[in-house]
Image 1 (cartoon, helix red, strand yellow):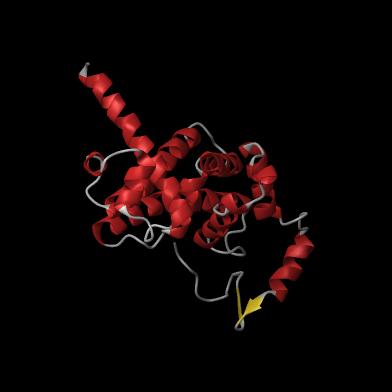
Image 2: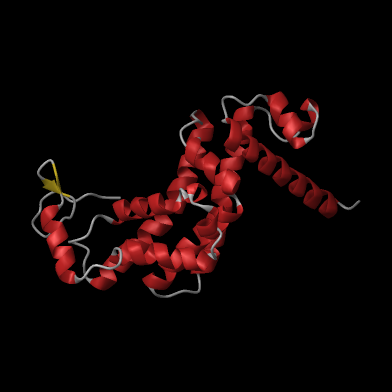
Length: 231
C-alpha cells in the first residue's frame, strides 16, 4: 500500500471516529460519556481509540476543530468569486445551513459543548471561531456600508451573532423544515434578518427604533448617540 493510500485511509477512519463520537456526545452529553462508551460506539478497542486521540477532551477538540476548519475553508472558497455583500450573505448562510443540515450531531455538540474545553484546546477553538465569525461580521459591515446605514443599525458584530442565533438551532426544527434545500432556508433567513417578517417598510423601522428600549438605552445607535460598540 502506498503512503498516499495509507494517508487517505487514515483520514477516512479518523473522520469516521469523529462522526461516531459526535453522535454519542450529542445524545448522551460529553460529561456522561466514558471512553469505553466511545470505544463501543466507534467499534474500536480502547487502544485502537487512543490511536486517534490521547484523551476525551482531545477528541472533543478534534470534533470542534474539524467542523470550524471545514466551514471556514469552504466558505472562503465560495466567497472568493462573489462581489456584492448580498450575494456573500446568501452564500454564507447557505453554506452554514447546508453543512449543519448534513451534520446535525456535530451542530448539537458545538452548541451544547461550546464552553466545555479550557486551556490550550479552548483557546485554539476560540481563535478558529473568531476567524469564522469575522467573515460574517465583515459581510454585514460591507452590507450596511453599501446601504449607507452604518450609524443607524446595530453593530456588525451584534448583527452577526443575532444571525448565528437564527441559524445555529437548526437541529431543533421539525424535520419537514430543516430538510428543505439549504438555498431555500438561507433565503428565508436572509429575508427575515434583513427585512423583518413579512417585511418592514422604512416607516415601520423608524417606529421600531423609537419603541425598543432597554434600561433607557436604545439598541439602535444613531449619529450623536454617544458610545459606539466595536467588534
